[in-house]
Length: 440
Figure (cartoon, rainbow, N blue to C red):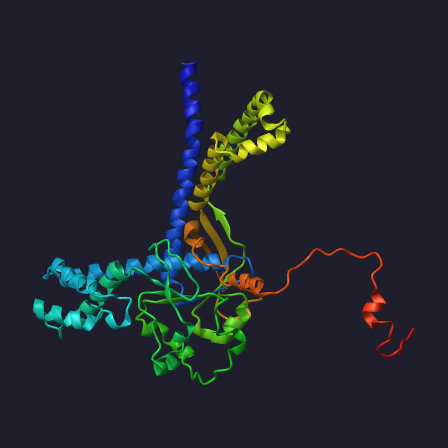
């Protein structure tokens, strides 16, 4: 009886950590779903992330871009399913086969061979004998059957063939699609110049990322184009309509006041990070326990190596034990193998954590310096893997290598002289230079 009670208590103690982990995991997962909902329903199409240096702007840019990709994929899947519900009389197995065969016949990365959605949809309409001018009423509004099929064809292409939802000037790796970003030239945002120069390649169903490092539209030049000759402001002003509310722009800026001045209400949501990003949900107690157990084993292993050293030190020319032990730790052995396991356990626990962001949503420039009741606060929880290891935060690192390789000099250690020849360096050959007009 007593043994049963003891075993029951031990089982309860052992199961408590699993209960804690399970509850925290569900809380963080639900918080992430809330972040996706907030992004989709409360943030505008043009989002600016602001904050002091090292607060987490770039990691939040990466995190929200992952959220944006998830949102785009959900919207594409919903569009496909809704179209199938509306055109329920037609075989979408046949429709999909026709479209996919057409897409696979193109090198879609080549502008000249990019799919012509109007052409393939017209073929579909003729093949399936669909009335292209039919308006479909859904109790809220009307949509033409041809427009419906064009949207379906584009969505199928983007979801299954292109499979890339990020355009950025800075290299960005997506954990959602396992691909690098599509190219972005910031001049493409100047739509009047882009049209005149025939230089424009911003796609639908993408999130456009603008890092402050590569943002050439500097805040110091925000008044230089008052008449908006380039079309940059008009593009932002009509951004939602141009892309049919399918695209987002997310940018980072350290100087939020200049950002608001530059575009004013053309940026729909200004996110101000008030606390440095933190990580939660990575269960450090598991790593700490395993690390202590490893150190306990390492201590006894070191004692064993001391004992072993007494018999083989002649082989090492009687070198000190510390030198022998250093040599041992650099060889492939069970100790290094365990340290490898420990390293990857730490990295794995980091990868399953969530980044926590806290701040305010600012609507006016005067909100920057004060916290008022009408300023909305936010808490974002985003999986760490979506925030780190995606964005190249040192884009210009090659400049240092180029500078060093192109230089004809090298730096040397300074050896101070006891009696530096100050006046000879100042005047040279005892010849006084300059004037002797001094005041004491």
